[in-house]
Length: 385
Image (cartoon, rainbow, N blue to C red):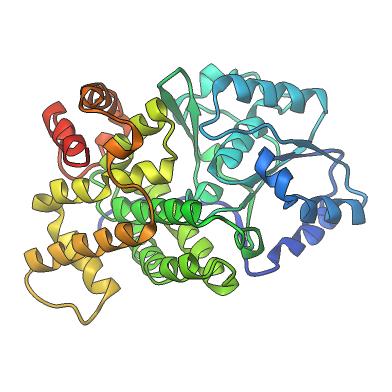
């Protein structure tokens, strides 16, 4: 067995109704003032009230920052940090999708009274230094896995994003409770579910840090997501299927936190940066064409995943690889998502710029099992035009 390292967060609380465990957390360690980081949609749906009610019952002081937007910008994060410092917070709860949790991670670092770093210091791999504030993450979508990853993605320009990757960003606690997902619209359910599947697939084929522990997590994640995504798209109120989706997305998050993602994400980022297509939807758009591109070198892995998803499947490695790609195409076809760039007001004239942007994602491309040239990336975008 090859040498490898594996890291994850300290505590995971999972189960329908598990949000009630906040009572125990706050009782054991009360804080002077907790910051709840979320977005306007959570406030509109009043989903945050479960958390604030628990705080009120325990007389736990809190403040709310609810200005998080999709693809949070550096300016937004700096505003949020200023808000947190002014409120003298001493703990952070990230409540929402990946964007809310990513913002919460950075606030937990920069709002610590003894933290000397600025946001600019954090970009890159392992640039963050301690200390940070206590951090609890509560996902409301089954997709990003951000609750168990040491990664925060920040929009740093009109069309650019930068990653902050450091074990210091691992939360102290993640709470997975399907009650927060049951009213998620079908389109968001589909996009986030495909995103989680991509995390599992790319972790399993990661070129540099693929390892047996991450492989185990990725396979089990993909199995859960494969089985339950059709269920929640058919019945969003199926709490047990929603809980299994959360669990699957979390396992995929743990997997790719240790065996990083590759070309699907690299090609998806420019679609989000330039055309504001959601991250999960962007991944869905490029997934199958990237699988086809990788197949010559990754077919054994894809064949293994196919047999894991359906033990009755048989045939050659090439045949099983093709079955796996077809299987993922069926998920996309059943997702209800738009799968052509032209239907999203993207033209052939835009493709070269997208390809050039994608080639800048070297942090991600280095993990892909097959190297890509600018021409390869351009051909993938053309195939989904």
